[in-house]
Length: 250
Image 1 (cartoon, one colour):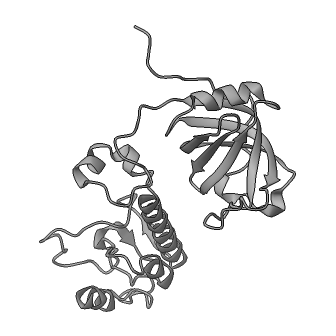
Image 2: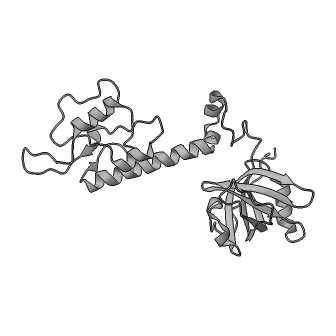
Image 3: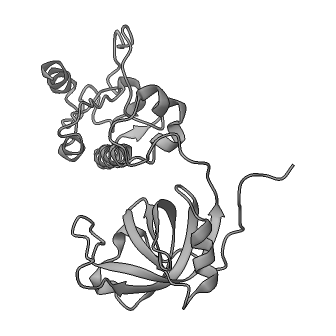
């Protein structure tokens, strides 16, 4: 039985830019983009596709008069198809600028396109702000494409990066878990922490990444090893009492 999905090998050219990174200063450049079809509009000749990747959305224009094969590909594309497109960055015509998009002043005049992978109609709109939680969890791989989830993943990545950089600069060595943010279970507190196992205060850069969010970063007492000084002397940068006070106050 033939597969209902359309799949193509990777195109012979690599990605040169992310959709959300292109601006008016890039006009005239030849670029290659990969991304998901966020929306598609067929005007009876020209086809417009909003292509989405990790950095944002950019409008692609498919003209049958200048790129017939690419226009045929756009005619088959549907929501959440994964496309590769190549073309020139051009300024949008006066009156068609989209001020709501960071990329709203430019578009791509596509010369070549490939469907890298097709998709069935998604069970919910990817850009929907309100979707039933049971549906989101059932299709978690789609839920993670939503703008709100993308923002949360970026905040988490920045917080983890800031924490690791701070702890590395303070002489800590991570010895237990690849992720330092985790919930502490009741009774998990070590009864008699050794002199080398301590928690550290949350660095300002990490805390800033969580501003406005109901997220509480926790560092495990048992996951870090501090730099040891003279016998009986602990590091001045390790302040477990202050950290626990901050947590209880929150």
